[in-house]
Length: 239
Length: 196
Image (cartoon, rainbow over all chains, first blue to last red; front, side):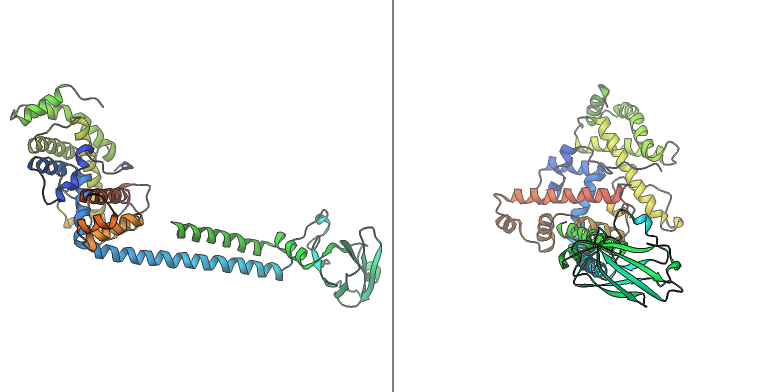
């Protein structure tokens, strides 16, 4: 069978068909009744209307029960979508706070993903507070690390030494942009400047904005999912 | 589509008792009916001839029963044939889901209500779907009419309408909306739910 016409059943004579439900009235003129009955016999569209009237008359409660169940299911689906949207948005925010943001800056191509590298802060990150935890991948053979904090012009703000691969870095003197350079002892384990990262200092609001704006793929994915679910819930509620 | 000028005349003559006019009517209707049915079923469909013949007979029956000539007899007959094809499609789809041997190799009656071509469960499901898709006002009105069986006079009061006829009119409008939704659910191939 070929594809069916998109409109389906069509009244054979719409002027007469518009009055087909007059057949359900208690009193109808004999001529009208004759015309309408003859029309209904050849018009499947009008028989569908009359059939519908008869179905509703005899079994409305059956249909309305199904409608009510469908309605409850729709409400449950909408509520679930709304709840899932809120959860996804909150989880995305929590992960954005817990996970490092994406690295941003003009020289990302120089900062490879291979070890050795600085793990936190990431390139371009905005940090808040007087101290920031500096972490990097250990360099095999290194007895200690010399850490230097400088301003963008290279002026020394702080320097220190540690045998571990992390350090609580005092950043109170850094206003705005700063850079950390780490050198190993012995010196010849790494080419000079391999371990360095540029970041910015700011207040808690700046740090939060940066983390949201440059969130990693996982929080961003959760936010996108949350927005889509929220839009779905809103449309279902409206509809 | 333009009628041949003598088709309405032949219809009138047939209504007035001229049996010979039936041949003229059928001769003029055959080609457009066949073309319309073939566009739905395909030219090689085994039931095409039966559809054409059933439609011609239905047309003649209508003329005698109603005593009225449609404004455009050819368009009228073509619509009968198209609807008949859609009903046949519905019938075949149901038969596909059942044992073919349980059914005689006949077409559904031309006067069949499309809802009767479904089984009870399909019927209930599809009517409920159409009801659920109505706007809340229409659903409330149909519930008042069919479920709570409120009197038309009480409904007229509640709706603040001037006459009982206006209540009937609103009910009819809502039923028509529901029929259109059913039409889509039953026959629109783009609708994934259209296969009951």
